[in-house]
Amino acid sequence: MQRRNLIKALTLSASIAAMGMTWTVQAAETIKVGILHSLSGTMAISETSLKDMALMTIDEINAKGGVNGKQLEAVVVDPASNWPLFAEKGRQLLTQDKVDVVFGCWTSVSRKSVLPVFEELNGLLFYPVQYEGEEMSPNVFYTGAAPNQQAIPAVEYLMSEDGGAAKRYFLLGTDYVYPRTTNKILRSFLVSKGVAEKDIEEVYTPFGHSDYQTIVANIKKFSAGGKTAVISTVNGDSNVPFYKELANQGIEATDIPVVAFSVGEEELRGIDTKPLVGQLAAWNYFQSVENPVNTEFVNKWKAYAKAKNLPGADKAVTNDPMEATYVGINMWAQAVEKAGSTDVDKVRDALAGQTFAAPSGYTLTMDKTNHHLHKPVMIGEVQEDGQFEVVWQTEGPLRAQPWSPYIEGNDKKPDYAVKSN
Image 1 (tube, rainbow, N blue to C red):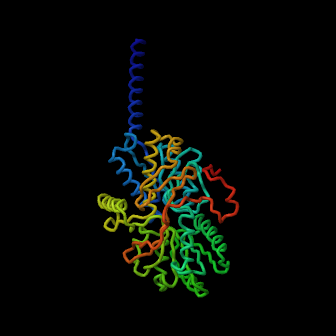
Image 2: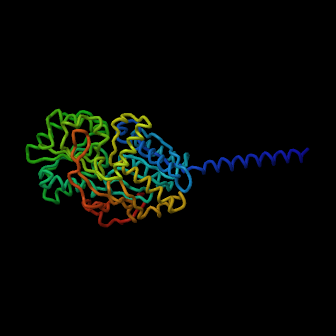
């Protein structure tokens, strides 16, 4: 009797073990990819399209056979424009969902929120948006622009004859780390170029701010003191009422040019752009750039938006952070193929020096030491159709300077990735 029970027990154990093996094999059949973007709240206007671009890119890679013979499986979460929730959702992706990489965040405060989690758990985050620099983590790859790849060239353009030769600068931003740090860098840069402190004004508004009547009136007053340009680091859905108020008060680009660092084609979809013709944005990519790679990229996105019945699919547009998302996922896939593994340490090493022929028309390179892409800089003018005409661009990609020379003490910081804490 005991022997029979023992045989039954052994048979049951073997069955359970076999089932366990089956589950393990099934779990290993896909490579899990986390997508960490706000799909609700004030940042949804900007981030939802990055989630959709990530899904399109994953579908495209899977259609070509996946990575190392495995299909990619997207795990999408919504941190809902809630900065502490980014950290919680990031931890969930790494510890519960067991993703091998995460693509996500827009605002720097969301990235700063998740950074300790990724460094603690040795996760891998690809961050696709321009930012203030002052960071170089071994657990983050930055596919957006550092200040010398967007903010500094944009202000140099505004100072030039072609850009209107501005003498006074109104720095308007959303009240968080990216605008404040970027404006700290720009203030130092402007002073180094001989601009007096009295000719620089800084104003900040909270996330989701909607009443810009007084601020725009103050911009007009400030401009009475000399040729003025506005540098906007306003983020999210606040851009809609800001640009509407510019139009309401009759401010045109020929009078007071506005150069935006966080407004692209996606944000302009919800605005009547006719009064904004000639206003500026500085990015590393615009949908309007003409080359065969971009033509294919834009057509694929429009077809995907239509096939998936995305909101506003009939007016689907691409923009800079979408391109950076596309480049980042493809570069990561190339690195995984090179490493023959999704192991974070091996993939990190394999990413150094990776190149990708981007829709911008340039071949972009992941720097071998600083975890940032070498990127071109473009300045575009708003057109009536909500697209941008490129009016200035660099000859080639620039190497990022994460530690801005316009912040004291940065010359002593290392030019390679180190943990932030």
